[in-house]
Amino acid sequence: MTARVVVADDQSVVREGIVMLLGLLPGIEVVGAAKDGEEAVALAGEHAPDVVLMDLRMPRCDGVEATRRIREQYPSTQVVVLTTFSDDDSLFPALQAGARGYLTKDAGGEEIVRAIEDVMAGQAGLSPSVQRLLVERVTAPPASALRTSVELPDGLTPREAEILALIAEGLSNAEISRSLHISPATVKTHINNLFAKTGIRDRAQAVRYAYRHGLALPPGASLT
Image (cartoon, rainbow, N blue to C red):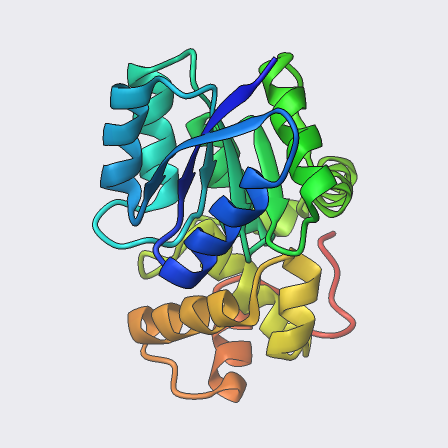
């Protein structure tokens, strides 16, 4: 059975390369190519493809929103994310929006075909690295009672509070990125946001703020 596929990616060179690769693979027919999420939704309605290969970070309408709209409006069309990013802040919103597959752009042709076949068969089409990430997140120990029981000050989000606590533990941006499975750029964005909300100017002030508001414990302290 031939799988009818739409490719969505805002970078023309990448999009054309994916279309060319898919054209060489058995059992795949590319029926459309979109440069953003709006076009992807429109092509899903026009061609009723079996699968949309969806980039995440695109103008006008990003891949997460496009996935949500496609799954709501055209439920017979499955979505496989094909992106550079495999961090938590990219992966989980895409899956929650309805994506059944998730690959990174270093995936080979066989892996792409396998993911397409899997989602068409009602299974999840996940790369091995994404499967490992999901297992790690599901089996990770729950956040400490300290972090879950404290009412967050200054409008901090739970993620910002989590990063603030890790700063107080002495972790660098790179270490926070690895610990939370998010990109260094995402870590930096969260830090900039929490600094702006709290008026913190540097990491030393961040540590004091975390201790003062009960978001982290000073060395030697305990919850009891």
